[in-house]
Amino acid sequence: MTLPNGPALSPLQQRIRTWKFILSPLSAIEERYSEYGDVFRTNTNSLFPFIYFCNPKAIQQIFTADPDIFGLGGSNGVLGHFVGENSLLLLDGDRHRQQRKLLMPPFHGDRMRSYGDLIYKITSDVISQWEIDKPFPIRKSTQEISLKVILGAVFGLNQGERYEKLRLLMSDVLDSMSSPLSSIFLFFRFLQKDWGSWSPWGRFLRKKQELHELTLAEIATAKKEGNHRDDILSLLLEARDETGNPMSDEEIKDELLTMLMAGHETTASALAWALYWIDKIPSVREKLRAELATLPNNSDKVAITKLPYLNAVCQETLRIYPIVTNAFPRVVQKPIEIMGYQLEPGMVAIVSIYLTHHREDIYPEPKQFKPERFLERQFSPYEYLPFGGGSRRCIGSAFALFEMKLVLATILSQYELKLVSNRLIKPVRRGVTMAPPGNMRMVVKQKFRE
Ligand code: HEM
Image (cartoon, rainbow, N blue to C red; front, side):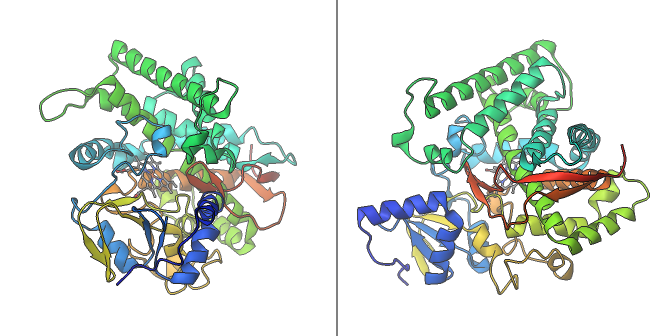
């Protein structure tokens, strides 16, 4: 079958469409979906079109394909603006597999659960700054929590001058490309001009350079101190490849920055959305409070993570507005047929997480926030995929859910939070993710305990 192509576009029409995909990606793909259905292509005039899929059968085929059929082939270049070339986000083939194996364990099992106290303490510290009846931007607070948590996990740091410097720089670098408008710089080469520290791209590059230098300094300090801590930096310092060689400082730095970046922006947005929905829908709030009240001890981390309704609220939060709307692009290396369509090398298969999560046939009333759907049935990994899938599935998925549950339980057991405005809020672009707007404000109405 020939891929649904749509009419040929003039260069101007193509440009307008590209801008729409960048500034308003959700409505852009929804329009294409309603026009063409399960499979469609964008980048129509290019030799290397993007083919979008949102059918679970197609997704299963892509996620379970032989490793030599798809590769990243440099298609994750936008993320390369933040991290160095040795980052897991940019690697392919054997090196990718090896690095994944190395980086997975700290984000699972007992190692992950050992961060429970840290998450609880950081959350309690951050929210203790909230004042009754004084509105504040909620995503800023959730970002402060998730950044502090990941800094603790990665560097083993949770206070002091070096920690504060790293924290502020990391926020600065990400914030400088975070508004819908400034995000445009990430996608157009002609805007990426270094006209000095006063120009947006120049300022971004300088901050990024500073962050990379500070991370290298942190690696040097850890080596000098010969630390034997339980953090990810220590783990990477001790790692050896098959020939017994350690990782270079540059490689370690790129992986540390990857964990920092991938590990907190996403979770911060997910937490802010969860708080939005919990306030927006009173029945959800009441059920959640009733469930939390069944816990004899509010700080029992294991019990919190097993609560079914809290779990369903987190799952639904990541379904309705997935923070990452598409899995990483999979560039075809060898011809493959998917759903009757022939894909040739160079074409790019895009699994649309957002469109899959909004299919009526899987999620009736997909625009409604209904955690109950996760209590009523189980979804396959090709129907529910907020963390992508296959060989590139997010390595931080268990950690992110663990953190979301503990942070939400801590906040809800201490405060009654309300949205300042009751208008419906839509996701906006924040760099390469879709997030609640930075100015979404909440206010503390009641404090349950000091
Ligand atoms: C709610 C939070 C999060 C969401 C929604 C999310 C989502 C995703 C998605 C969709 C992918 C691409 C997967 C694919 O293409 O199949 C990904 C990859 C990745 N994520 Fe996450 N993520 C989250 C939290 C985290 C955390 C806490 C970490 C911390 C380590 C992390 C680290 C990574 C890394 C390193 C990759 C690249 C994996 C690879 O290329 O092999 N993420 N994430």
